[in-house]
View 1 (cartoon, rainbow, N blue to C red):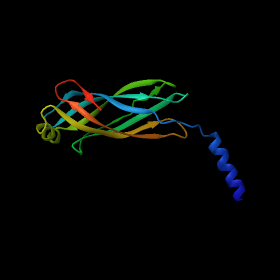
View 2 (cartoon, rainbow, N blue to C red):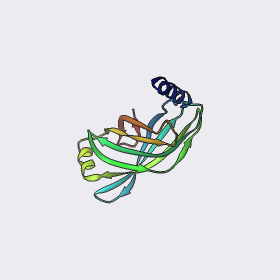
View 3 (cartoon, helix red, strand yellow):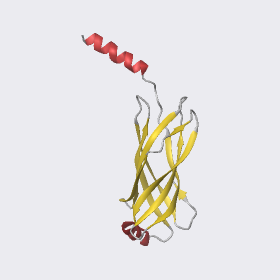
View 4 (cartoon, one colour):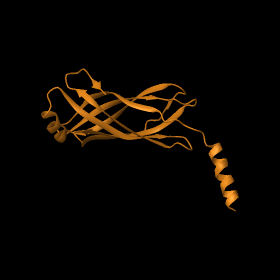
Length: 147
């Protein structure tokens, strides 16, 4: 019985495709507008696929932190495909708590340190989610993001 279970597990591991983790990075954060208490930000991500097969993305969940405090979060269920050995950009909107954000921004004059973390959901049998985390600096003078 043990030998049969071992053979079954070995066969499953041979059938499961090896998927290398793609690289995910934030390339832009842009203010879209909102109200006094809540703002919408458009976050642009860049995905690089090191695999010889396309990666079908089903959705993304993300949280933006400034100074360690979560100030924005969002969920995108927009499906797209990252081509094999290729890359793709996609945008998602996150909603920010401006009361906390303004407190954090008031302490900075030129740039803010940020972290963005979350998960990407894939439509693959043996590779369902990819957690990501990136930190960097966002310039308040309009020059953009540095990692």
